[in-house]
Image 1 (tube, rainbow, N blue to C red):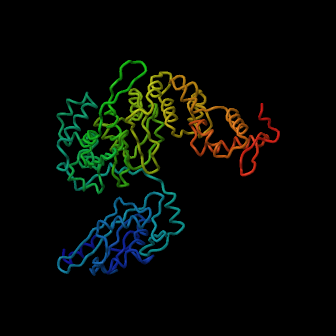
Image 2: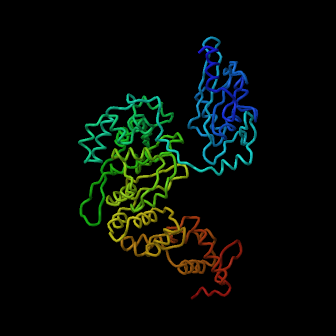
Image 3: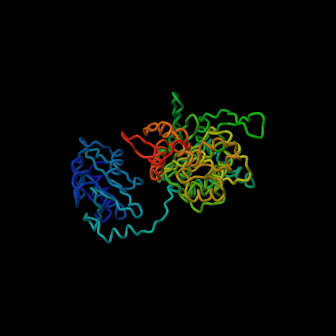
Length: 556
């Protein structure tokens, strides 16, 4: 566009300044970007975002929209990379919808930027220079108490990223093989409709499967069925990364849409050789796959379905020698993972409702809450440790799928015991692996007489030890009564007349319960010595040696 044409275009789109629009000359963008609170770019980002969102036009005269241009020669960011810088400098500024359109006049070579600024997230004012700003008419001021109260008390309306229509995409952006596989999955899911479905047009099928909306391409369609070269429409790093880290072996590969196809290809990269399990009711070892193929795909599909795509992160799958780790952005959207172990809880809502419906219709996932339950049952039937979600955080769901047995005898005996429900098996599996369990879980296991000890030194009970043939290991974990250790200390001091503390530690460290670490064992020795000293059995003599108490008869 020429300078005159650009001015006309901008006047038509942005005819006046108001709460959602501002015109700024900012002839040198480096000096105008983030150096002057109340007057720079990031202040206006905060002010406009804290209203209803809008636009900041840079490189034009205030009032006339005459093109003056802005100098980018010494600015370290282009129209793409500056978006990440703006998000970094303006806490709570949404990245979704934050775009910069760059115009360069063909006749005068002047540059104009139009920044599209999204509205603030619900109940989260946007900051710049550690302050909150807003627009009142065409003025920029610090956020008023009234406006902040309105933001903080906003009704939160769920935003489904996956349901948005991608205006510039069409059916040519979808992969034909993926569409055929989607149709096959739909027919498997709904066999009564299969004959009819195979006679539908592609447009009809995709609409009925809730992949497109009224013939329009959605983000869901591009994620599941889109060609790799069409991913740019999403404005998102739609990637699944597989990494192999086993000893000295290193490998990695990135998988792009269509995820309906590439999820299977990623699963095929995971090493899944046979291992041997000796169950207690067989004489010969049972060969089983290191990982259950359905569980691997279930875990990967869960990452795709539950990912918080507004975070613009990749799905990461990390394979090690003994496990596979699945990570996606976002927390558990409803409840905790442990709520779903028994398969009794049915989720009432989803982060990506549209994507969930499509994946359900294509027979990729379950929506009744059985997915996690089925993975646990498969691990139980294969005598392998339970899937582990304990590394999850408020920002990421992380699931680790174990691929080896930690204690074969314990695992097989425990999982073969039909008297134990799946949640109890899972909790005992956690105890055996020295993982923390909740207070509610401890109460539950104590009521069933399945654990002993005081938190955090929980061990399996004598009952479980006998059931799983771990009597010796149980004794090592439980240790002996304190009177036994006191007798050892007193006898040794009497035998040698005096003992340094280091000698007492050496005497007891190997005999104290294995459930304690070294620091905890030394703390317990402190307690034993203090108890013996209070009763007059021993005392501290010269050079900090422990000696028999004045009235102690060491000859008995």
